Each structure stands twice: as C-alpha cells, then as structure tokens.
Image (tube, rainbow, N blue to C red):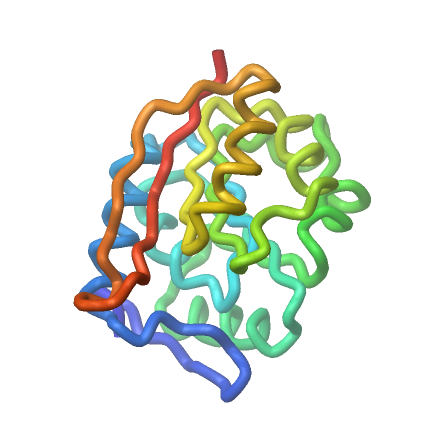
Length: 186
C-alpha cells in the first residue's frame, strides 16, 4: 500500500521497499509537477505504475511506459483494483514507444513528463523523444546523481532550466538518496 492505493507486485517488478519514504518521494514529485485538472502526464520508465496511479487524481490523464512486461501486467491489475480510469500503459522501451506510438502531435499532448529511470539514466533517444513533445515541465526522479547530471546537461542545452532539486532520503544511514528535480521549458 502507498497512500490509499493497493498494488499487486509480481516477483520481478520493482517496488520501493521503504513505503514511508516512497510516499515522501511521490509527494515531492506531485509538488514539483504542480498538476492541474487539464494536464496530461507522461510517466516514462513507469515500472508497475505506482507514481502514475498516485498522480492520476490530480490531472486529466496519465500515460505510462515500461519495458518490463510483468510490471505492466501489475500496473494494469493494480489500476483496475484502485478504480483508476484515467491511466493507460504502453509496453516497450520509452524511446521506441515515443518514436513509434506516441509521436509529438499524435494522440496525447503531454504538458508534464515524469521520469524515474534506472541507475543508467535516460537512453539518449528517450531524451530526444521527450523534448520533441515540448512538455512545459519535466520532473526527474533520480537514484544516481552522475547519470542525472549527464541528462540534466542535455535538457539545459535544449530549452529547459532547472527550477528545483529536492533530495529524499530513501534509506537512512546509507548513501542512497533520491532526488526530485523540476525542469521548466524556457
């Protein structure tokens, strides 16, 4: 459980084990996104859709993308149990789905993009595909400051400016800090 949501977790799906800290992380994402009821949110690298399901109550629509098939199955099952009707999921690599199924000017006009990539950060083609959509905001949750810095450099060179960086201590007494950063289009 996170907040008032319940999630089904299969053995190979990622789930934040420190649920109290995860709620703080998701609140930092929500605050950074500053959503309104007209926003359409892209949740890239969505895993089992926990962030998107939480954000869905604050916006018009959430679209999640995840490459791991079992995670998408978990996301669909949990969204059904949580009775969330304004969320959909695409199975595939973020860069491929954005290039082939969710092209700019297509079905969705994303005003906010939330990314929570693995430690390797964003795939270069995913960065390109995200800025092609020209979202007003990119909310980047990162567990690896080195790859975040690399990706940040790309966004700063491509009409975005860094507005805030909020650390979230996911595992006290360890070096594991998540950061939630908000980038705004100039």
